[in-house]
Image (tube, rainbow, N blue to C red; front, side):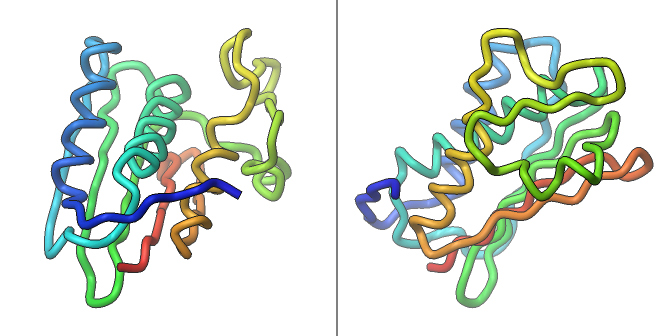
Amino acid sequence: GVPVQRREMDLASEAAHAVHEIAVAHPQSVLQLETSGDLVGAWDPTRVGQLLTNLIGNAVHHGAAGAPITVSARGQAGAVELYVHNCGAAIPSADLPELFSPFKRFRTGKTRVGSPTSLGLGLYIAERIATAHGGTIAVTSSDDAGTAFTVRLPR
């Protein structure tokens, strides 16, 4: 598992930091941050930041060029939900069951998904971080709606 050191934190500021970090590294990307509700809870700020940068970076690399990437943090009664959405080609449904497995790199049509130097660990690490916090991560993907990762972190 992934060790976590929980402390009170505000996911709004961590999400803003992650969006800024990716925007600086990828100035051609259009990143939008939306926050709502109470986003304070006891999580590991370093690990949550890593989870967010992995998901946002993934959206930058696999999303349609020039299309906006939306990052949302929504406070709910007992948890916070994080969403990262991008437009572009869908993840093939046959690949979805193995998406969070380590060292997995997939093909979309004739094109290998991921950079040539990628080890295929980003989504695996994101899933391990969510699980270490007692949370979940899920993905939906279609050509029409794009790809959305949803992370639920209990407070």
